[in-house]
Length: 288
Image 1 (cartoon, rainbow, N blue to C red):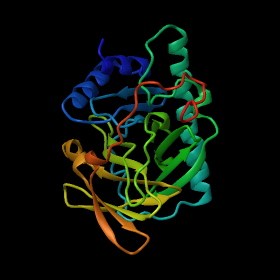
Image 2: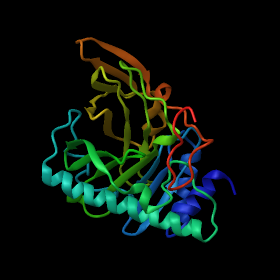
Image 3: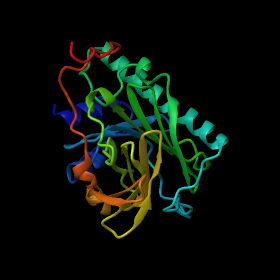
């Protein structure tokens, strides 16, 4: 069993084989990120080479009008109520995922990738550091100091529309330069037959006050920046998802200047996959 099959099996015990195979084939055909899908209790992960983060998400159904009809390239502020509802939903998804992974590990199943939480303790204690609203979707970035969670959810569209991405910060110790950004989480989300989107987020240096994304399709998306992080998402098609990593990133600095930081593919932090602390342990002090 290869890493992709192992991750799918570990995180997708309830997905029908035919749907799992469709998603498996789709990911093998493109460079993508791990994705876990939750749909009324059915969820699965999709992993591929050059992965960034591990994502839990639902199978967004095709709808009329489009679920993304209210999407805007410029985000607006989420209300306290929208943030509260989104946070509850997102934490429920990560807790369910961590519980399932812990049960699999207890039964002797393979250890999951570094960006997949292995216990409920690892997903607890989250605080919100960034929020935004685009149409009916609330987008959050939360952290507990050891993990970062990116969540996209639309309560108006029902329980099945929630996407959660998880990143183990111990694997990405190098923060961006003061005038730079990095990419911790990113990729296309959705399944065959449903609507699709691209979600991306990462950290910003102390001098960065704004981030813009210029997609290969010619769109400009303004990211949200707060608490040392940036995030953005935009509707896409299955075909356009193959080029999401070629999106150009422009940073705006506190001194009023701007510069091109590069494409998303060049901003991916290189994970450290050796010497990480055991589950529940604290990292060793530097220099020890």
